[in-house]
Length: 320
Image (tube, rainbow, N blue to C red; front, side, top):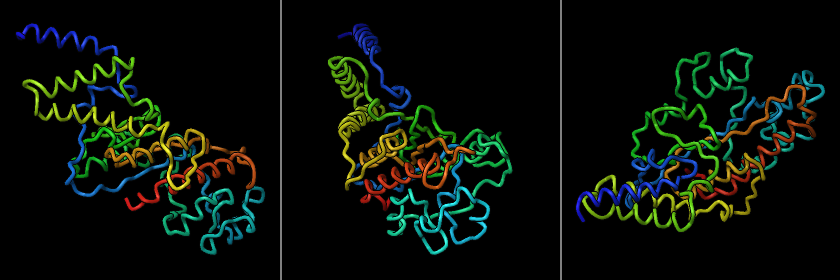
C-alpha cells in the first residue's frame, strides 16, 4: 500500500467514524490524557465527595442545640421538640428524619462542624454560594474554584479523565481550574454512540491504527488504547446493572442517583479523586414547614437517606 492510498483510506475511515460520538464527552479532548496506574503502582489515594446543598441549609434544623433555651424561644413554631431529637452528645441532636446518619455517628465516621460559614455578610444566596465555591468571600475576580486550585497543588500523576467529576449537566464552579474536570450527568451515556455494528467496527479499526505501523508503541498509542479500555471498563460497570452493596437503597431521585453513580465510579477504580454532587431546594423561607412535615423535613429526610445509603454501600471503601 502506498502512502497516498494509506492516507486516503485513513481519511475515509475517519469520515465514516464521524457518525459516531462519545456521549457526554468529546473524544479528542480527553483521549491523550487517560492514564491507568500499572499493577505495581502505589496504593490508591483518598477520595473527596463534596455535597452542596443549593440555597443554604438551615443548620439549626439539621443539628439541633436542643438543650439551649434560646433555641426554643427564638423558634416557637419550627423548633424540634426535645422528645423528637436524635441525641448525639447530650447537647446537640439530629433532626428526627435523619436517623440514617445516627448509625454513622455512632460508628465514629461522622463529624459535624456547626456554625461555620462565610465571613462575607451578603444576603444574596447566589453570591454566598459563589463565594463558597470560589473560596474567596466577597471577591469574584478569581475565576477558579477552591477544589480546582487544590488539585493543581497536588504532585499527582493521575491523568484519568475521571480524576475530578461533577455530577450534572454543568460543571460546578468549585471544580474550575487548570486541572481538567468532567461534568457527567449519567454514566450510562458515557459510551460510543451509534449503531452497534458501527461502534464495534470503528473501535476495532481505531485500535488497529494505534497498534500497527509507525505509531505502535508510542505514548499516544498507549493512551488511545487505554481510552477504549476505560470505555469498556465503564460498560462492564453498567449503572443499569449496578447493585449497591450491603443492602444499601438509594432514594429514587436526582441526588440519590448522583451519589449512586459516584459510588460506582469509586468501585470501578477509574482514578476518581474528587466528586461534586448538588442537591437543591434548600432556600425554603416561609415554606419551611414544621419539624415533622413540610419542605425542610422532606429535604432532611432525603439528604440523610441518600448519604446513609452511600455510607452503607461503600463500607469497605471508607478508609479512602
